Image (cartoon, rainbow over all chains, first blue to last red; front, side):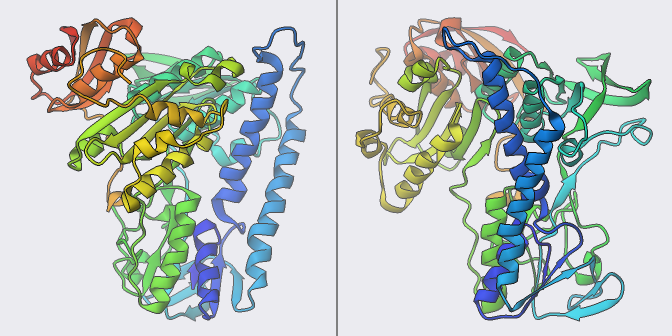
Length: 465
Length: 87
């Protein structure tokens, strides 16, 4: 029995059916879960739309007269909704229905014991194994006044009837930056309030600096070290008082977007009765084979401690079904996990940082190539960003790549492959560098960056290699 | 098992920020030499070299880091450095 029809749950159900088992999959809300309905799909659609509009009004080419003439928000949202509905039907509903051994049950599941689930308080079901894939939802900061003021989260922002005239974004990680920039590009006045001293505090500091500069260059106000304390509303204007470097400052806007993280959907699931343990923040803890503290119950996706990406949830779902039903204990391997943030420029990382590589015992060498050195950036008249590679200085394999570039998301997979082949077959950065890369692509930057690795640390002369 | 705890390094609250003035960087390759040299110093958690043109490096490190080790690392890489600011 699978609880949740998102990326994780659907993958698990399909694998279980393929293995010849009967599957019941339970959904309390909309089929497809977060990604297709309120996450990845709608946000990336809006982000591309915002980029098209932004380019119409701000391109760097001489002699071209284009104009950004206005945004019909309801039309844009309707197109997004249509796309979402189409993909939900094709990728989730139709797929689940194509397996005769999968039964979809609409309702709220709650564990009564480690072996029993009750649906909507009425129907009791039992199964040999359970896979929990209930996902997560946007967190709302419990600041003073929050109960009296309506704030938006990523879900409700993308479902608004009207485009906000101004938007205060509370948060400073992927969702806050992606949606903040998209809204600003579509014409909303945007301010980003980040609690930490920099945006994306877990990323390389030069990535944080690079993206902050890019956002500010587009007219977005970015305030860091800003801790929100109070929120109130008067005359349709929302005001947030935040402590910035010790001083209390007030920020006002018509709407507020709370993008401060997500909380797991584990309330009212009966986990205590099932004997499933969660961590301090409520996320289900699992071992490498995706098994929870209760041997017959597995868990995958955003409801667990796994990294929050749909492709991780799907891989976990498939593996959990195999492990749960065949008795195998195959671990989920996330060593080569590419991560992309769809701001402009995009941010993409895979593998280890220099620090992590050192801590893991590698002798490290790095290459850092500002994007201006990539010919494609010149023809684009857009050289924002850099490509940084981390390699093992002894065996010359690639260990990590950290990229800030307009199409970083496309570039990173080449680095991911190099890392994978490095660890499996000893593929080196020299072999990578000697490969033929097409000219005037952004991915050529990987080859160019690989050319700038230090060959001889003892060589003190500048610009070696 | 990486996803039992945060995969990326969080900047610690106890960490100090040290700004160094660096002389002798004439290209991006130099900036990378300095970045690498500083990252290898024990106690350093983060290094930022905004651009070789700015002649500076910003280091985040634990309280136990030895300032003179930072300067020595940069000098060993072939450049001159002095501590400009400590927070």
